[in-house]
Image (cartoon, rainbow, N blue to C red; front, side, top):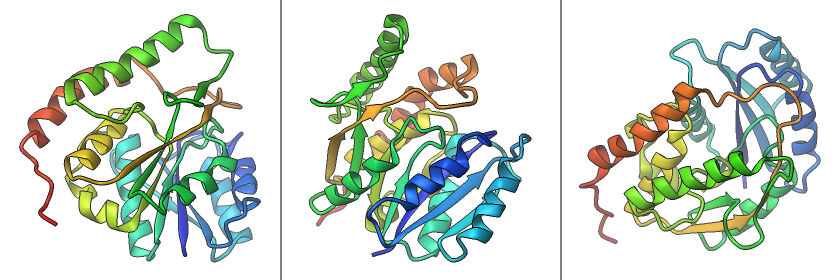
Length: 243
C-alpha cells in the first residue's frame, strides 16, 4: 500500500527536515512524502530539494508558482498524489502541531472508514497546554460555528490532520473545492459528509508549532467566517450518490 503524506510549506525551514526524518521513522514501509512549497523565501524550497535528493523515490517536491494559499496547495498536492497512484493520502502541517507518530493511527483507522480525522475535540483529544484560555475558546467557538451552520456531525470540523482513502478524494473531486485558507478544512469536512463518506475521528494531541510563525492572520480568520456561508451556498444542494 502506497501512503503519501502531503505537507504544504511556506517558510518552514526550521521544521521541514526534522519532520521528514520523523515521518520516515514511522512503521509504514510504503510511506512517501510530497512537500508542496508555496514560494518560500527562507530556504525551505532548497532544503526540500535536498531532502528529495537524499530520499530519492520516496520524497518529491512540488514548487507552486500560482496563487498562494493552503487550500490551493492541498488541491495541487492531492492531485499529484493521486497521479502518483497513492492508495492513501495523508494531509498534515509542517510545524509539528500534527505528530508524525499519529500518522500510522490515522492510516489504520481507514480499515473501517473513508477518511480519518485527527481530532482535538473527541474524547482523548487535547490542545497544547501553553494555549491561553482566550485562544482555546476562539478555536472551540470557530469549530462550533462551522458545525452549527453546516450541520457537520464530526466534532472537529476545522481539523487539518487527516488520512484519506484514494476513493474518497476521487469521490469528492478536489477540483470543485474553492476555499483557500483554513476554511478549506471545513469545506472538505462538509463535502465528506454530504457525499456519505464514512468519517472516523481519532483523538490527537495538537501541539504548539516548534519554530516559525503562525500563518493565521486576521484576513484568514475573516475568510473563514464568511467562507462557511459560501460553502453552504455552493454545496447545499449536493446529495450523496446512490449506492
